[in-house]
Image (cartoon, rainbow over all chains, first blue to last red; front, side):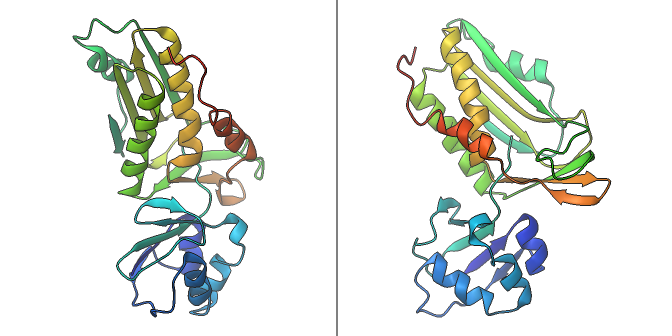
Length: 83
Length: 159
């Protein structure tokens, strides 16, 4: 799975992108978040408050119950501030 | 048409190019967003200088195209242009350009306002402000969500 992080989530996690083989029992974005938080304090800090975390799967915004597969590109970021 | 770019744009040249040769156009509306100096966007810091716009390459283009498609589905437009910059921008610099052209002014003006509201909440950009207290990520505002929400009900008269 290709994982991408932006803005302060990127800063807390410490890098912009990574390729990770995610265990097959991880079926949703929310399960992926729980799994990532166990990877280290940076992940735990970045993904602590889900009210300010948004997700995209294959470059479309998705809710946290959206399914994920290892072939997906999954991104985490704060609410956007474009314009 | 959408463009995501580091460099500045020439507003006059872009508008001239967009409408060139199409005499069905009766009105062109435009919006230019610029970096504001002074009060922080969300009031959390006292003063800002430059901002740095981070974005999600690939998804940004995809979402801007989707936003343009939504505007074209709601209004009859002869032309539509969104240019959004990224990277470090100083106060006074242009950030975004939206231009819409239609045979009638209402479609041009309304779709331009719609696009700007939707960019705020749908385009994957994040703003890092330089402040006297250090760099500060701008938080999304409830008022921007409300501005987007007012377009959830499609306009009664599309023309």
